[in-house]
Length: 243
Image (cartoon, rainbow, N blue to C red; front, top):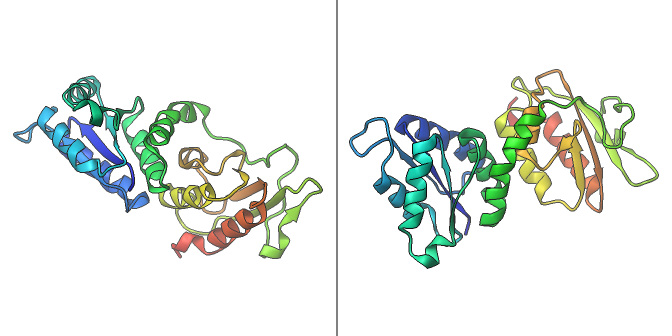
C-alpha cells in the first residue's frame, strides 16, 4: 500500500492538471482531486475534500495539499470531521501546492510512510529558497571531464565514485527524468550528489535547471556508490529514454 494524495484547489482544472503532472512521476499512487465548488465554480467544497480523503486512503494514509488560505481551512475542517482513528492517518502538508504535490507523489511512489511524504512535501520551501547550485562534486574540487564510457568513472582513495556526462535529451533534466533519477537513487545505500545537490531529492534536482548540452556530475560514496554512478550514466547516455 502507498500513501495517497488529495489535491485541494479553488480550481477544478488546476487540481486536475496538477494530478496529471504528479501522476507522470508516481503512476502507482492514488492522486485524488478536490477542486472547485460542488456546482463547478471557483472555490472549495468540504464534501469533495471528504470524498477525496476516503478515496486516497487505501490503508497507508493520505496527504492533503492545498493552494490558498480558504482551501487550507476547508482541508482542516475535513480533518476535524474524521474519526479519531483515521485522523492519525491523514495529514495536511504546509507546502506550496505544485512543488509539494510533486515531492509528495515521488515520496509516496517510493513507498515512504505518511510522515516521510509530508516531510518531503514541506521540505520544498527550503529547497526553492536554495536556488540553483553550480556543478561541483561533493567535497569541492574540479568537475571530472565528461565520461565517454562507463569505464571512465573515477574512484578516489576514499571510495568516492565520480563521473560527468553531457545531457543529450532535448529537455534536459526536467521533471520526469528528475523524478526517475531520485526514485532510482533512493533505493541505493549511498550518499549521492548531482551537481552539488542531493541526488535523492526530485525538487533539488529540478532546481538545477540542467538543459541539453549541460554537464551532469555525480559523486557517490557508500556500499552502492559504484552502482549509483553506473545507473545514472546509463540513463544519461540513453537520454532518459527520450531520444
